[in-house]
Picture (cartoon, rainbow, N blue to C red):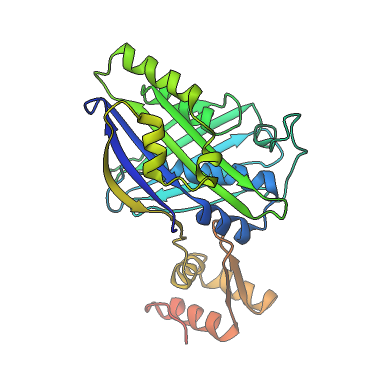
Length: 300
């Protein structure tokens, strides 16, 4: 089954919710970045969180989630767009830690408990909306919920999980975000919090074969849930050879000539997806010639 997410409402539209399964998406990221088990869980949770937060985006809008903790993995960056495309990376993808005493991946230790979570929403306005909040645990889900409560004043329940096999293969990944909308009573908010404590781990639900609809039903059963829009989710990067050429042209002809003399080619690796682009000598010469003549840069 391909990854996808579903949006819904409950309690007479006083609650909105979105659930997703991201197993294939996170496995794609793991392979691209050659990640350790714990780093896979950390980045996988971040990619899933970005998809959940970006569920309401419209065409040409995007969201960036940055987790800047003091742990050995360094910065984690995840982006999502309105089509359910996500991409991201961890600064140190091979960083790892021993399992916790409960035999769980120590995501909080790898991310760090001190730091900041940043969310930037590019809604096509002149200035993107930016919010941030201190990390509370490094476990990502708790940090996202704390951010939503502190920066956006939305009481939220966020559950994220990534199950990694001994051979590093991603067995299950998914997430859930349930939010109380303005006008929701204190009783509704309290009910949400109680349900969060009773909810089985997301990895258990996904590993048991639950669909996003079934995850929402488990979370909102008895609150008259209504299922809405379904969207695919996939790891997909916006990088391309043309974008690389444009970036190189931005260096200017003198810089490109120095690069040509020193290296004989240009090699660029996309940090978000790991794709590698190589422009050989004739291609660089064509770019330089286009810049020198003032015409449209291009390759032969």
